[in-house]
Length: 227
Image (cartoon, rainbow, N blue to C red; front, side, top):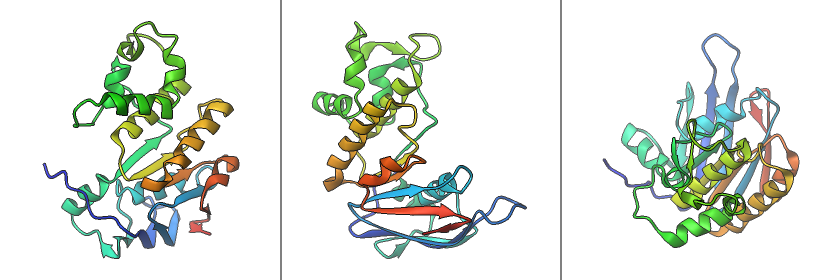
């Protein structure tokens, strides 16, 4: 497989994006959004306003009926380019997916690089997983999942955040990724995310406006438009 990434030095642009599901009214209409590298962007909108659809289009998990995505002013055209573009992105959604495996393997999930102890410790701190690991005698070797140790939805979310941090891609997309956390943990993680700003471009989607106060630019999505 070709694991190369597209060059990303300046900006990503969504241009004249229109999307609708089958026979429904347009969910997004002629939407334009430009994201500069190393910015933190906030996107706010009510439930059903098209936030998740917009993110899926941004990550090219779904293709819009109209419009295009440009990276450094070059159009992303074929499937090969789409894969290379997706290799730039870590996507953390509220639907956390965990393996029936150890915490360690859940964090390493999908990362082909050799295990790096320092990176793992950084990821555990960044995501605040280290806080609850103290309660587990086996630490990161603790088995979690359906048939083993039950963990809370907040702990799950922290493990998924640790996973994306360990994988350390250039673009971090958080789709309500902290909504199961208590306020204090959420604040700490959002702060940790901001501290990573120098080497990441970050998109935070939240219905909690206070999470977005840290962003360089905030957008509201409403009636298929973004302002």
